[in-house]
Image (cartoon, rainbow, N blue to C red; front, side):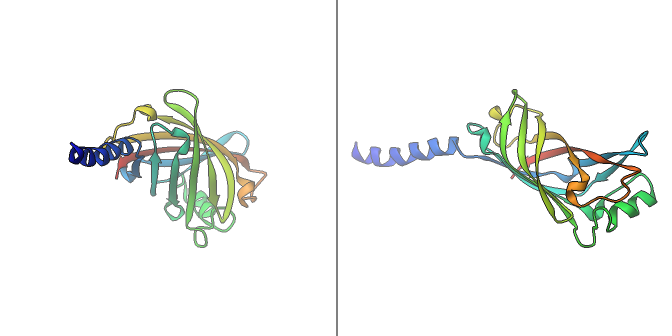
Length: 189
């Protein structure tokens, strides 16, 4: 009987800790994208895209507040609706991709506001400047019931002031507020 206890006790402990282990994901670049939309001339807008995304997420279904999200964008892959806009966005007055090739968001806490909705607090780094940002997110499946081995899609949105990141040029024709939208398809790792 004692031998069975010695064998079963560690097994039970392993099963209990396994249930509390976080779910780990990586970004699926084929199913992920980011866009940044800014007012232009006070009457329209322009949207840039960041098609090259990588990153990881760690979610613990029984402790959702302990989210770890780390998403990087290759700013050199930035797209724009025309060549002039693309040239300016990649240049020194905006993203300066030669010097700062990566835009990064690191989310550290998640506050759920519904079964599938929440707010992620984190830090956004662009052009060498890091600022706190809150990202409103929607999950395709409630994260509290996420299952190991299943993909998870996160959609997020936030608005930033581009001037906070040193992008101050063309203030008479380009708005200061930028709406950022994210879709990250996360696959288990």
